[in-house]
Amino acid sequence: MDWLKNRKSDKPFFLMHQFKAPHDYFEYATRYNDYLEDTTIPEPVDLYGVPDTFGSKATRGENDSLIHEIGTSISKRNPRRNYGQYYKIDPNLPDDEYTRQTYQEYLKGYLRCIKGVDDNIARLIQTLKDQGLYDNTIIVYTSDQGMMLGEHDYQDKRWMWDESIQMPFIVRHPEHR
Image 1 (cartoon, rainbow, N blue to C red):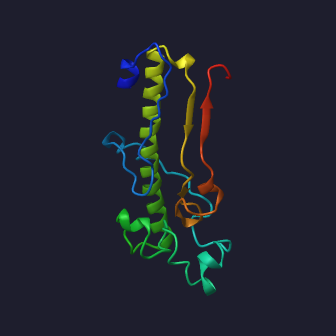
Image 2: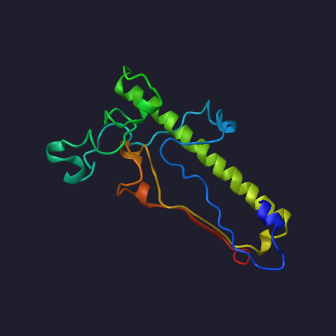
Image 3: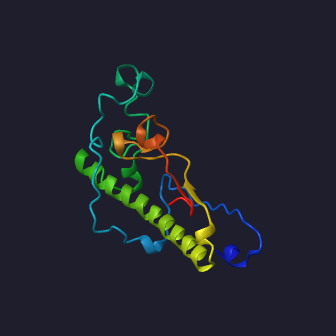
């Protein structure tokens, strides 16, 4: 924003701005600690249990031998890599309750991180407006790829499910509203 305010105004500009990727153990500003605290996030229908369509032999293994080894899970499915361990969810809870509590912590962390992105995009747009540039600027928003947010009991982006291959692509062109 300082660059926009102090740039040479007699020339066109190209500005590229990136945010910290909302991956893994989501980092967000402390001002978002209470964001969504009293909200229950709706769960994906396929969060609980391993569906029959849980990948191919390459990801399921012979006789389903890899189901508990491949893919970071929200539930206890993967005993080495599941988010309940990171959030210190009581492992003695029944499986469904463990999964429910882990999912709520996981999604709230993600949404708090995304809230920071949203707020800062708003600040950037407001700076464009304040500088009289908004109505003469093309804005493109995109990301690298989607992210599994508990769907199919996955946390990741490396799976060939719609959730992890879709990506946002938004263009605002002042002449084409």
